[in-house]
Length: 334
Image 1 (spheres, rainbow, N blue to C red):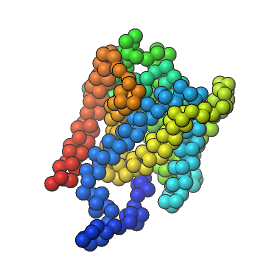
Image 2 (cartoon, rainbow, N blue to C red):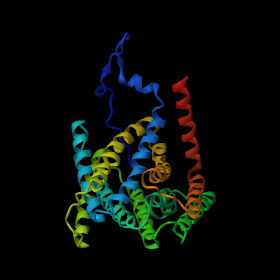
Image 3 (cartoon, one colour):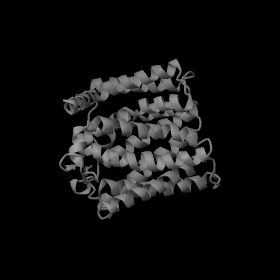
Image 4 (cartoon, one colour):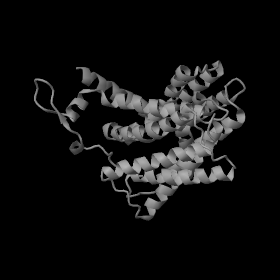
């Protein structure tokens, strides 16, 4: 899959005047900050917070209706913002259509249908740890789907350890309903499969266009699924229900997406994707602070095993990213 530059450009960034100084471009100020670490933390908090918002939201919303409305609104906003930035949104080639279809069917519809239904009985922190297994599942499925990425012995051990962590979380003391855990595990597989299938296409469509159209396609499928399951169409009017929808649309759906573009331009796509490793940490911290969540010892042990699995599967990239971020922080304070 080809990666495209984000929507930020120097021509869109205004200059500003500081008292007693010459005009300074905003990029100059931005470059003085530890940009990459700030972006990583912000995106992780926004995306990690989505699990907490879903947990509260499905207490009031029918799950598929909730997910469908979220991605219908987020998709429209992403496309509008991309259009204002003159991003290429036309779906032209066969690979463009395939990329939108894979995004809509696997990454949006299947992944979120299973996740939202699963989170009716599984805490957001536990769900985030299970979803964070996606890179491990991807490594396991890659030889079957794309025919490369041979599984090394160390990576195989990482896969086993990661799944042991998932089993520990799913156990009697792990804090989640087994049926809900199974659904979220299915959501993890759907996301990993979609990610691998996207490697097999070379779309000319921009990343914003692929995401925006994919969100709308996935939203349509989610809303059809909602009707198929007989979910009520009534929209809950409680402040919490509306706040969770608004947060999911604007926070993870739009703001984090645009910040992720900046992160791509700052550290590159390979390292930017590692933000997913921080999401369980963010989700757990927010759940403890906002919902009073108390992880069980079994859940914490499962989190540790999942983290060890990450290190064995993708430790080189994780350590490389850590060195990059540390270097940027040191440079910003020098």
